[in-house]
Every structure is written in structure tokens, then in C-alpha cells.
Length: 112
Length: 115
Image (cartoon, rainbow over all chains, first blue to last red; front, side):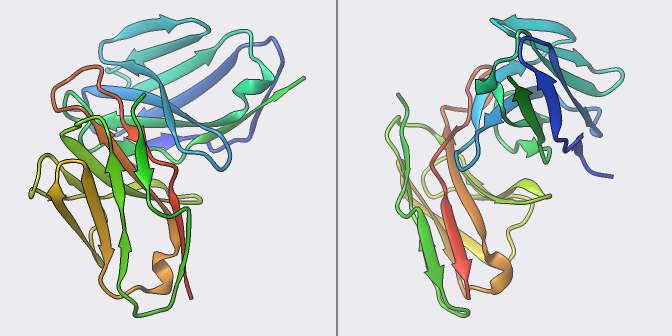
């Protein structure tokens, strides 16, 4: 079983709709959870971090964490074509960023 | 803005060659990391470093070594390049451990091809 699992997609969402990206992890001791966005041919960039159960909102992005069920999700409201990218879920067992384990990513396409 | 600079964007090397990948960051970050990224396998941690002259093995250190003689520079060394080391290599840095909001800043990547 992979430590961090994501549906590879592609996930196609109409412009203006909500895109929902999911991630599950295997280590119950995981403490820190991150979502990175990676455009084709570019490096990953951090878009959200979440450490506590519940929701965390930042603009059009909402991260949701459920430690009991070992999943973390990312919602993108009012999806824009510029949101088309691969979204990487990353998990760390320690607070901070050392030794992040990444999922393989979900490719999201926003259809105009 | 944090800048993480990798010395080469594309590199082609022959099997058996010793290969050096260089990474420099300009934000005085304590932590530096080397990942490789392959289709279907995602990002995998090769080595990381918390401080000058310190290094820790990641998940796939075999066939690699690292050097951190100065805080801003972290080098990845392929002792004897093999074709299965053909990959995209990403360097990253972050400002410190136990810091809730310390993101990883990635360089632009080096696409290495070993023939």
C-alpha cells in the first residue's frame, strides 16, 4: 500500500464549478499535510497547508482534514482554466516540512 | 522572493560517469532537499540536510551521495550514473524544522538523461 494515495485523474471540471481533490495516507502519526500545485514543466508550489482536523479556507481554496479517516482533500471553488495543473498531496509525520512524502498527483483540467 | 537555483536545466550523461547536480538557495534556509520525480511514482526523497555538513538519507538514497559544505549550497552526486537514474531532479529548501508554515521552495529542476 502506498503511503500517500491520490487518484491520478485526469479530473475534468467545467469552468466555474467546484473541483474536489482527495488524498488518503497510511501513517496514523502524520501531523502535517500540504497541497502543492505543479504546472506542466514547472516545479511544485505550495498552495495550502493544514495541521488540524476540519476545514481551512484561503480564497477559492479549502483544505479539509479528517485524521480519524486518514484523508485530506482540496476544494477549488469557481474553477478557472488557470487552475488546470497537477495537484500533489504531501504528508509529514513531523511538524514542519522535513521528510515530506508525496502522492503521485491528480491531474486537473478545467474546461472553459 | 526565495530563489532556489539549480545549475543545469537539462543534462545528458553517459553510463558510468560521475555526475554533480548543484543547488543554491539565497534565503539562508537551514533545510535542503533533493527529490527525483518520475511519471507514476511522484516525488521521492533522495537525501536531505538540516545544516552544513549534515545529511540524512531519504527514501531512495542508493546510488547517490550529497555534499553540503556551505549553508546555501547542496550538491547531489551520482557516483556512477546508470540509465535508471534518468529522471527529473528537484532541489528544495525550507527555513527550519517544527515551523508550521515553512513551505518547501523548489528549484526549476534538472532533467537528467543517462545514455
